[in-house]
Image (cartoon, rainbow, N blue to C red):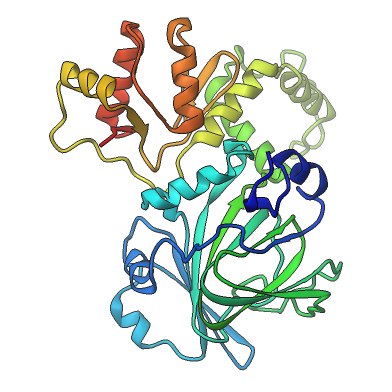
Length: 371
């Protein structure tokens, strides 16, 4: 089905022609979109210690980066061009979480978060490139976007941000409220506020190979047991006691070769790692929790929804929520898949184990009752 969000393209056509291949400018992607919050609300969010926020300031090509949380006095000392960046507003604003549902044609496992940037006239974070896919949706105001497929990735030395030393724009567009620009990874781009401006960046995480290896090794450390200890009954006298002998190297190599992993372990690693909450996120248990029977009654009548901070993913046999794994119950597999896909569902199962599971998640703050 064609959608205005993608400029009249179907989801399939967009994925085939543009995803990780080439940019796409979409005029009026979300008609009458003016944003989800105003400047003051965004600044207030940056005061919250649970919210990741940054202030980027530039003056005569000198750059300064400050990390939040901020206080009102911080905004009284700003000089030169500046930009406020607030990450993960989808964890704190229901309207932001609803906006992300428009991008459900991309797997949840690839979604990073929704970042909002505010800048007065002339503000920006400088020309740079990202290693991930991003949709740049314009809120109120206007922003000029310049892009380039340049291969020169040299950076400004000693800058606190990864700012390109030489940036040669190849195309540029002025985006107004509701317009959107999709950029695949590694496209150099520069956004400049024209008047006051707010941009909503829907980013999709790209795991580096180094990150995958590092985190999988951590996973193996927690989930792998090898019996035995290093032995060397065949030890020979040596003239060089400081030398690590070829025999010792060979023995250790034989131990490491015993490490084996299969597809099930790989999927378990991915499910737990990709659903793990970000370090700044914490779950709040309900202040006055309902009894189990009260919870189930309300869940059947009004439904349940994942907490804004929760991430739920699944494989063929296993469900993952916030870094925890649980096996599907055949009687409620469809129900739990719907909860993961749509983030809300009406409770319609009589399976006792599933009811216990959902009530436990409610007590942990992983899900809420719908109003």
